[in-house]
Amino acid sequence: MRTAVNKNQLRFLLLCMIWGSTWIGTKAGIEAVPPLLFAGTRFTAAGMLLLLYARAKGETARLKLYDGFRLSGVSILMITLCYGPLFWGMQYIDSGTAAVLEMSLTPIALLVFALLLNEETLDGRRILAIALGVSGLIVLFWPAADPVSLPTAEAFPGASLWGGLAVASAAFTYGYGSVLARPLLRTYPAVFLSGLTTFVGGVVLLVVALALEPGAISALSGNWGTVAWLGWFFLVIFGSLIGYTTFMRLLRDIGASRAGSYAFVSPVIAVALGAAFFAERVTIADVVGIIIMLSGAYLALSGAPATEAAAAES
Image 1 (cartoon, one colour):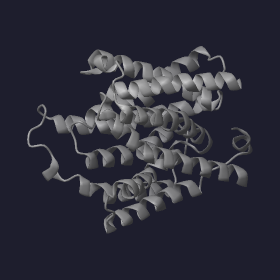
Image 2 (image 1 turned 45 degrees about the vertical axis):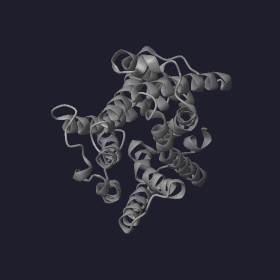
Image 3 (image 1 turned 60 degrees about the horizontal axis):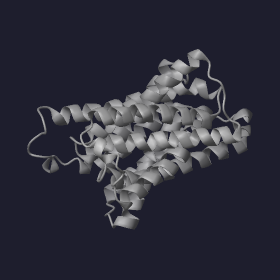
Image 4 (image 1 turned 120 degrees about the vertical axis):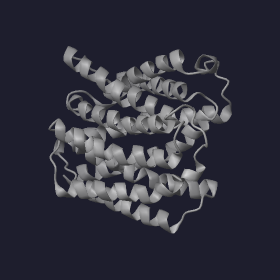
């Protein structure tokens, strides 16, 4: 029992460290490549590699028809309908507002859908954990949402409103997809499911990018520059192959709302990396926000269940 808890805690820490550093690769990529194309190629490539790895390990399975429909829905929700609106919306709102919306809504959405689909039960600990985490995120990121820094003219009428709604919607599509995926994870290997969802969702996202995104077709030439390619490889290997598979295992073992509390720790990693490598200033408010977020994450994970089955699985 204790081994299972430790294993999931280590997985959680690994996930937070990886997804807390992916912003470096994303920033490097979308400065040179259309965002939807960058994300679509990343997930498609990661899905192919994961499926090859699953096949080499003998961790593949034949999907039942009903499960195939569910997996298609999970893929589109967690990848296509999450990252498409997220990247689109971030063009029209400031980074501070985007961070508060996406990261604070993700754990809430995960808990709401887990309750609606009877995957989890509500308790005071979970409510307090999410309340602390969201409060910490607001303290940490709200100063960045300075109205003075917003553009004087919107790209189109209501651009900031629609951009904010798009970013917010990404949290709910990701949350819904994550909870829908949990029954599949009880039947099929996590690596196999991770590969299928990232590949299917990535292909759909890639098709959308090529059909609708300006500059996407010309960017297929691959003339992105060394920095963008390094960011792309980092996201494929760490952000998707390792990070996404780790999240799916946590989703299986400790539930959606607890796994989603990574959103309260990953920003801490991002702030630390920004201070260490980019000389970004850390204020007293940042420290207070970090302490509150970590308290929320600890409270969420301290009640995480562990089973012998979870301990035995890889």
